[in-house]
Image (cartoon, rainbow, N blue to C red):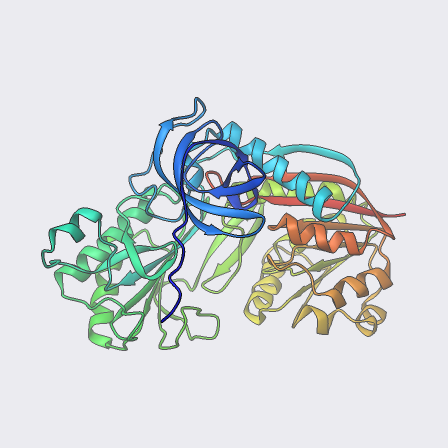
Length: 469
């Protein structure tokens, strides 16, 4: 017989002290740190421990004894169920304060770095409807309320179109109104769901891998262009055509109406053939008079207005005079490369995704930029001493890696080519700190500035400029 697991304790009158990395709040009980979600500093709560380790615990709130004076009401009806926008209950000024502190802590605590100047975090002008891309999931296993479960009644419609419930990969909450993207996005999503209900379309079963409708991606631009991509699992041409035709007729303003039949085990579409049903195969975003082509597989910063802020800071930190060779690592669709090209002698962009490099090249052509060159491949394989010998030693490197940061061999190559200045843009200050620490013997951290790309979440971007000692 297996040993019965000891029940973890219930603790009353716990005072929430501050916010930790990853957005969880912190309480301290004796010498033990407790991480809790759904609370803000100043709350006093009764909690149930859910995980106990040697140096920390995790807990959930059972009831509130006193609510904090700084707490505000969530504006979204899906708050607390949907996994996004968990900081709606924290005033925006406080969100910025904790994000700024998070970046400083990670650079100084993880990287043990000395920062000569820390600039104030750049706030987002929009705190709602700021995203230009959202991905929704069709599921035949709708998340049920406690009332629905308790009723023991048969669920009339088990289908949903929305977001996954945190920790439950096969449960999706129906989203009626999302405050992340424009109301047109809400109208399109709700129309597609109601059409599917009315015509008895099957929703995807993630466990058994069947069903017609799988995913929906909606992208928008600041110029009013819209891309809608519907991912199907089953290749039912008649039903696919009927849905897409209905969407086209209902929303003639859609610039790019696409679809894909994806029968893989995962949702990624980078290796799938995208079909254009109506309109163009791409949409166009603008920034400082430049035009950027965005396809179904393209990466583009999901907050367009703050992307301009982010890139402007990166360009300012680079201190270009027009004579430099610039390497733009993890260039994506070449947004940064093309953005700084007018201030450089030559820009070389490197990116893993071949389709993104095609877009980067087209973006240069479309904007009459002639001093950029782009290469596709794994960064650690492309950025070698031989590559640098052919293309020239960089004066400035701008790097914007994924959350995992840079591969150690990439850091080593950067150190060998020894650029005068490195501008490191990161969506994960923890891995940014780790990478910069590896370069700290040769480089000094001159400036750091956080940028809030994602209000009401704990996520934050950060830009650091390093100069050779």
